[in-house]
Image (cartoon, rainbow, N blue to C red; front, side, top):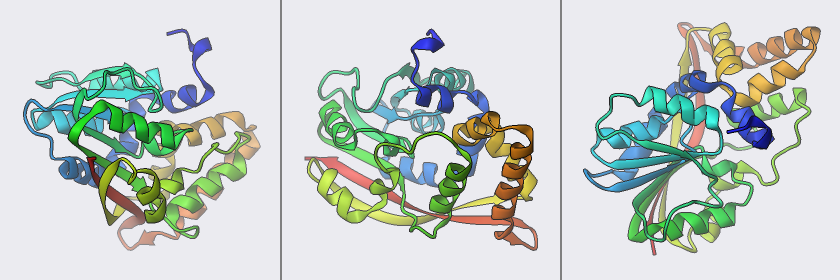
Length: 266
């Protein structure tokens, strides 16, 4: 696809390519638990929205499901294709947005999204699309951020925002972490169950975390690339200082509050 036709968001998220898999590695506890919450069965048709490098899609395929992964970023999809080589059944990956899924009604037995659909610019439309492509009684499993304003994830994105000229998202991804919002918006089309989970990132030191994020996480990589050299050094220093507060005697342990959302299409 011609990069000139891609949205800034698709370019930003896709730029790290395979390096984003390191970010998924740091989230692998919740990704695995969300796949468990969906419990894919052999032969079932599963859709992974915001698949990234395909971590959840591969886990569902490993369970024997027929998996389709979608993402807005071709850079992510190209990486997912490479990283999924050799799987049987092998996931199929294609470009699509959560608000306009290119599938027929009732095409899937299950839909999963791990920190993906929460970045939709039109959440109500995304929820309607998830319900549309699921068969009646089909299952839903989501991983969402549930941090309070003083929690790690909110402070992390706040730190990046302080150094970035990018506009804030039109809707807050943190809405998906509030039980009242989920019951109103998602609960209109799904019977849902919510479970809090602390997903912990373990790393040897702040330098390691910096390298993972500046190479693998689109918002950090794009912010860093847009800065002058002196401000790049200052951004890195602020990023590393922020993470030093999570140091233990044997490296870092960064707790992040999430929700695992299970649903059944009404």
